Image (cartoon, rainbow, N blue to C red; front, side, top):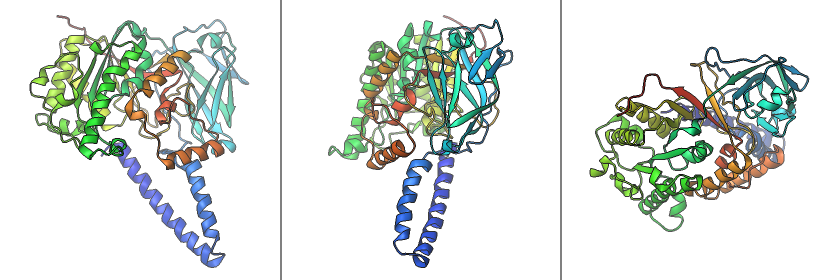
Length: 476
């Protein structure tokens, strides 16, 4: 069981206990006070739950985030003078540097009910970065894109429903422009490449998209059309396989550089546990990857038998790495992103790289899902992406932030809109919850689409974690 599944299990157990206690109290109030009062209190309690307590937040908002960055990372001296951030005189920042600012954020009493926001202003590129309700701890803002206005001493920080405390600390991380290199994006499912890296792959000199699974399960939307479970699953997988090949063209990546491997959704952990054995689809009654590979521009070695096995997956990845010779591989982060298919995708790439003569220079890790906070990145579409929650100190991390223009964000939103898995209407309960949160919590959702990923990923920043591979790359 993954850590996220454990956290959800504990959360649901605690919720059941809380509901039982609440029910006993309501019965007592009905007996001792008035029969109708429990009904009123129950409705008010449900509204309060949907508005303020429905988020999956598995840590205290009073906890500090804990990050460390590589030794010798430049730390320009910075001061918070009222609302204005000031650098030491003469310090100038590189325009495209990734800038991370640590400071304490403490919510006001209203910030326990409305999401606290830190507003960045003073230049032509204002921003808002949102944190947990009731926040009272160390947080890491993303100031990437604000280098010029910060160097001029004109950047202002203002807390809404929160206060900014303590001495700020700034890190300035410089990176090469990875878009100038050959990029290979690993997508566990169709749409993961767009969610994490549309801005990167659409702006790169040469990009390849490799999607590992067809994403054929949970096809209830297609069963509503009158299809049985197997037909619905196969249709969904075929549509998502088509999406993985066709949608990247919107970002300038031709079909000839998009590969669908056709393995089965949520079966990668089972494949990894028995590497030589075939693991069939849970719902599509398929045991052959070639069913979802029919849109591929060229055949792979494993197409000889189509076995959905871990050994075939590794062979596919080795073959593609040797063929594409990527200088940069983009893949899920092994700690931040807990989805089992994402974890296995990252592990498969690392295992495959141990057996290839070609080695990339750089790995860029992303996180489309989080263990501890389902709303991250918090806040509205179009705003910045602060660093995600991390409650324990781990190895030093090197963030790289790519800034997306407003036009890039529109194009990213349209690419997501083409993805069949992000198109179905939300359940009525979730729509009602949004209406309550819109009225009581002042939350807003974009017009691009209803799926939560339109809010979370159509942002001014794409955030990656950089791993430089040691050793000299060998060429044939």
